[in-house]
Image (cartoon, rainbow, N blue to C red; front, side, top):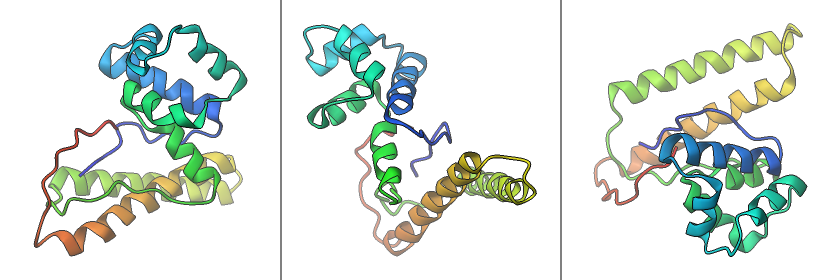
Length: 159
């Protein structure tokens, strides 16, 4: 099952790009220069320009995310359109760790929801946690029917 290492939901394109670049640096030891090379860009300064003004050309979203190894930009675009995105399940069984992680995510989200209604936390935190829970539950909803005939999992998960 694809599980996100980080449950952060970006609130802007600039933040999404920063999260992708942070992920590339922390998980894959890739600098902005290396990401630029993997994207086939002539200059790494272009990435800094896009991040500064929050404008990433749509034809370069997938190459950027692929070079970084994370899909925060796609996640932001999906959520900003009022949609949820789930990874395509392969039908493989969930491990006990996967289910424990789901329980922890659900508990955290419920706690944030309670704190929001008690006016102890902002709406962004609560919404981010609820989106994460719904996407994780959506994955299980789609995975269960495929469980008897699992697909091969060729994709290396990024998050």
